[in-house]
Length: 318
Ligand SMILES: [Zn+2]
View 1: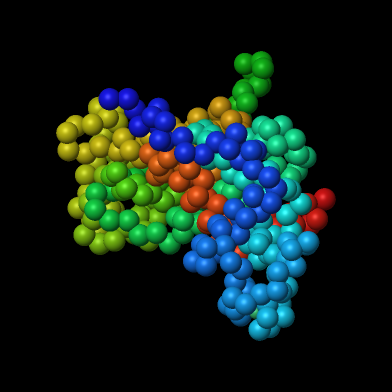
View 2: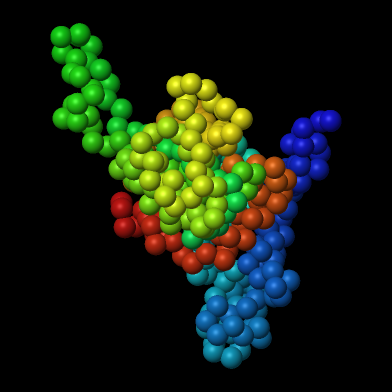
């Protein structure tokens, strides 16, 4: 049978269909995504009132009950947008379609907008993806694994100038560890910290008691045995011994590594957690149609409050 993602029903939204919309149709789409429970009829974000004056010419509403004025995007991740509604819809389509992520440069070229706008927009969409993972509890059979990102020190050109990179003083100090915890055929969560030892606290915080945990031979996982039924796989011997296996956790890292090497070139740093959450979202939703991926991200973005990090980012960081 043909792979699901190659079948036509897996392609349920396209850039072509977005750019066939008029700006007004795109706006109506935004209203429907913002207020699904009233089928796109405005709901006052302040008092919950559904009686509104429609200031059509400015695409704004005024609440009859409390006189609060608002728009389809106020108070959401897309608050004070400058981009056209069609471009915003297109951005979400482009973003979910990129299996290895989308760089801000590519997004700015595709949408013909400034690099700065694309950079912030992509991070807002990552925030919408990450929101789904927040506080998630995992159960059943889970796999966990960690990997390091960033802090690469380029060896000096001449051999006599090279330093031993195994010593702490010769490292950059910028290296960070990502830990993933993943249900078999289910959901996953990610954590970022200084080293892989954060994994233990991460598992205890997000995996419910009575679950089964699979991990590799690294000694910081030893303490898992006290809290969970735990299986270990020694990767220097084999990748699966029929009992223990962390292949699903590894496939998360292969996606995150492909995002780093193939798309962004640099993901380590202050926003590593955002890229890790994005990779986890893409893994967890990889079998969804792209139309449903689009809906999930758009609804999450419009149900999110204005971003603390990314709302007005360039005004605060000129
Ligand atoms: Zn109101």
